[in-house]
Amino acid sequence: MGDTTRMEPSRRARQLPPSPIRALAPLAEAARKRGVRVIHLNIGQPDLPPPACVLEALGRASRLPLVYAPARGLPETVEGWCAYYRRQGIEVEPDEVLVTAGASEALWLALLATADPGDEVLVPEPFYAPYQGLLAAAGLALVPVPPGPGLGPPDPAELRARVTPRTRAILLCSPANPSGAVWDRAALTAAGELARQAGLYLLSDETYREIVFDGPRATSVLELLGLEEHAVVIDSLSKRFNVCGLRIGSLTTRNRAVMAAALELAELRLALPVVDQLAVAGALAAPRPYVDEVVAAYRARRDAALAALSTVPGVEAHRPGGAFYIVVRLPVDDAERFAAWLLAEFEHRGETVMLTPMRSFYATPGAGCDEVRLALVHGPETLGRAVEIMAAGLAAYPGRTG
Ligand SMILES: Cc1ncc(COP(=O)(O)O)c(C=O)c1O
Image (cartoon, rainbow, N blue to C red; front, side, top):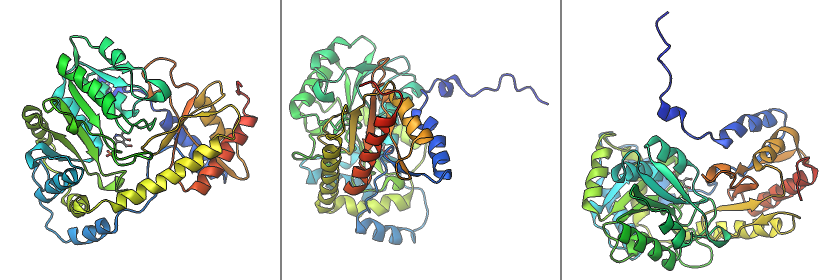
């Protein structure tokens, strides 16, 4: 036997925050084996079909030579992103865009290109849970900023109060996963003003940009004047085009030094799949109606779910302005325990639901302990049934508090 005593996974990997969803997955599997149908409200995997032109292009792309693409992305795909932004009224040059493997890679590149180990990043709560692991793995400190009213954008004074000499960036998400909060121009401008005064990057995750229910698309930080050197946009086609499996996103910035750094980092992974990139190039340049249909579908689901939730005693649902999730406060001792109990010990007419406990969407100790997130990834009828199951579960749950 060789010496394995020094062979442990890295501290970097071991310090990653635990995922409550990972803990729930075996319970869901066990429920399924018992014959209970589990309605998954836990992951943001859209159930809607992708645009037809993506599927057609996918067929054509599979006949192409499988060579390395440029690290920045295929010229057609880079151009596609520029055409897309132009259609939104945002002028972006090809050398300001880097095609990435989804928003996930864009987040990595944005963080690694703008901050060093030990630096701090201000992150409004509740945040997309993986931010916590991404920052930790990059050696960055996540400094949580409490939300404004209704889980909306934080009071600018709360952001300002947390700036220290180590602060390098503000990482925001609009429309936000999980709250659905849409940052209006005033909120973005206030964060931008702070970024300008304090010399911070404004990293803006705009994965859900057009999925807005009560108005036009969300404002982009690329539209804020005087922030050209600060704004870095993280973008993705996963949700707006229902192509999570294609892994196409982008990082866009007018800051040349940051783009050069991000490109150098991207060169380490050589290239992204040519098939995936070509599949979306045409769809990026296509007009808006497909996304409009997606938004209409989610709006109907949001309204159905909110109507159903409003009839359940003791629950408080936050009305999302965009994205496709609803944060719900429950009258329970612990949302993680309740979510586990629903899978392990409860069923309603042969079905149960899998919810996402919200604790990992906050860094502030204790925050989110009585909250869950529902993903609107089923039609209105199934969502209505899921809420009915949740209500029956709440009525029977031994740890109910109110
Ligand atoms: C806010 C946000 N950012 C980034 C991502 C990552 O998406 P992808 O890597 O599929 O583009 C997600 C996925 O759920 C998300 O909700």
